[in-house]
Length: 184
Image (cartoon, rainbow, N blue to C red; front, side, top):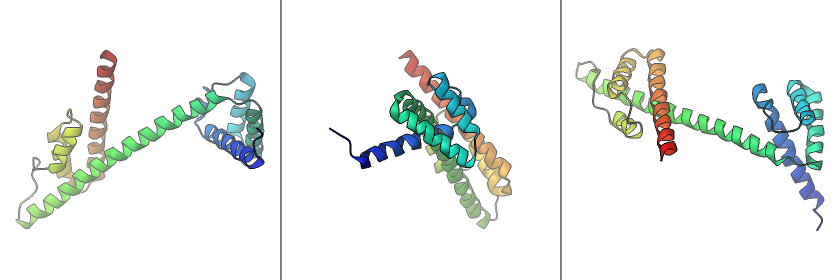
């Protein structure tokens, strides 16, 4: 059965998108491409090109890949992009946790200030309890202290420190999970 021209064009466009995505990877990742020497050189050359020359090189590489498909390239790309997407998602989750805690601290400070008092470094927090359920190794006192200091001063360095604390706890939890799965 013959493939329609429209389907052929769609398939070529998919290969072209894959080539473009591979060229968007960092140069060090490009060196690890799972392909023969000549094809790797074409990719490395195209990575350094700009404008029309790069577009022509993409078209040329696409033409070669349509003739001789390389499924290992799409697998390589999905592994790299999947890792990058997971890292971005994790980063945004940590930002959300940090922002939720800071919003709660600011709101708590407003309530306390209405009573002519100042927020203490150990204040009751629902968000810290939620974070502790997700990241059991987290230092709750440090979270509360940093959030309270940020609520008082609004200095960005305390927000950044809070993020670093969350990221370290996430990395520790991930490392422990990997060790448990490797052992079991």
